[in-house]
Image (cartoon, rainbow, N blue to C red; front, side, top):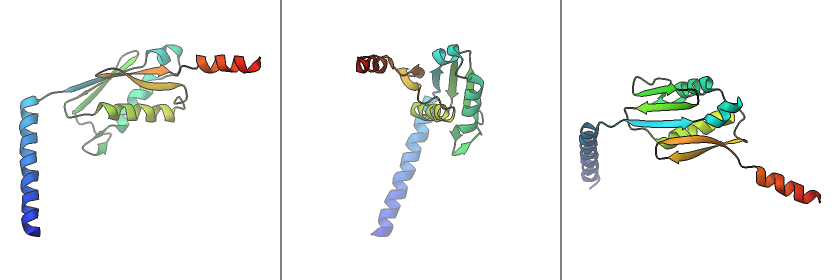
Length: 140
């Protein structure tokens, strides 16, 4: 029974890889994501060059960091970073890396990463005006 189960598992795995290869061959899609950093860059607290360098060093392709091998292209404009991937790529992974960069630069307390549409994130300041109003009310 155990050997029969192993054969069935391997057959299922082989069948799964066949369907995946058919989908990827038929689809051949690319993933394009944007991280918009307009506010912090305009205020001068965010360095786009080091942010791009961080992504080049940290993005994993096939389990290896720093080896994008043409599968992932990173480009930067004055206030946005664009990631083009020819392989399957998670938008959530970009949010994870962005938050990791913010923590490293000690900006995590002031900035948050917000999805502004299906293929992009935006760095926004935390809204602290409510806290300031509460503090003024406590003094009276």
